[in-house]
Length: 135
Length: 432
Image (cartoon, rainbow over all chains, first blue to last red; front, side):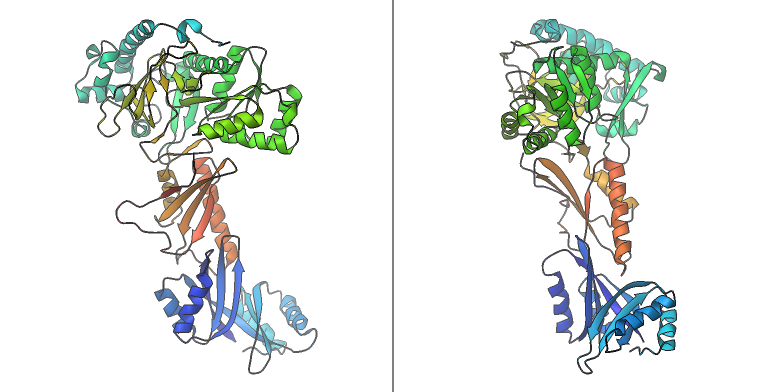
């Protein structure tokens, strides 16, 4: 399933991350997954939350710069080689990955991968065809 | 023993110097009136004609020229000679996108190089010396000026230009450089590198001529001790000719202005009134011998003091202190003139918000420049590569405008302090 990921611009300054999580916490927003990409001088924080609309509204209100990006959340088979099978299928379909990160679902103890590609529709179709469950 | 390149001029009596100045000024004002419509118009607006200028005492009647005039008259508006008579252009930064270009006839190059030769001989240079010039060559006047002066003295000249420190050191050692010409910060860096590479004892340096940026007495002592040389200051600006407008002698208590070519005044930067010798104010130069680009009453924006006390070196020309600051917002970074407005121009062109901050510092004797600019929602992307690309483009555009590297830091929106009234754009952390 395609989910809306929120990307937030991070200045290289102590407390930037804490400021963001504080805003989310004050607004009772639940963080599902979090990932960070950074260079020496700035970063991009990527968030999957329970209520993306609300989260983006409160972050914008606090003056953060954000953007919404559609990404795929896929269940990874819980066995050795599970991720490898998933990536092999993506690769075979000639879909280029921009980035990915993992998240564990606390209720089911399942591992999910968040995938970002240039073509979400093709990715969804490929995953389905190969029997992967997206959530 | 004090050496002079042109003793009859450098040690001339005050009466003689004044008489040269009177005669040359009258001639130059007439020349500019006849050949530079831009300045003639300024004179007419002020109600002054060449007949009103009978000598140096009338200089104050003439209108000023500023960097804004150079921009307005760019490129040929202040030229007093046909282009066919000009043989060289040098250039320095303007306040915005347009650079300042200065023209030289062969006569102008000759007098400029004479001035540099005086500086080199004042630093003890002779035809036995190996003069190592690592000022930049090209449009920047540092390299070409000292290079020409070195030829005139008869030194064996090494036109090294800037950069490539290992090669600089190797040539210094292998070819026995005795006089070093560069910015003081590069001299300090070379000194440290020489010690690091273990070649300090193999150097034959005896003197250094260091200019194009501000440096303190402490820095002088540091360079002198580390390199075992005597370090001399030199001053100049492209608009007036280049390095060698004034230079230090063995006394090291100020720089003698070459008054046979340039008349110096100190004015109140706010009112434009001429201030007496010994008072701190803005330095103004009038070129009385230049042919192609003869600026009259050009405001340097450098704040300093003139003194006419007798100098132990025997020179009689007036001395100026090291510049103590600026009456405008120009920064000198790594010897390069930088105006905040230039940076602003680039940011605007690249579509960044006007809210920015410039941070200048000196790390290990070398200047650093950082431009902080706020990220905007339009420019933000989930793709880190795109942001990095954007940052690189800005760095390249700044380099093209300023000629030096500026580190770009993208910061969160509204994180740069908005002050009431005039924004604080520049934070200069250098302790000079």
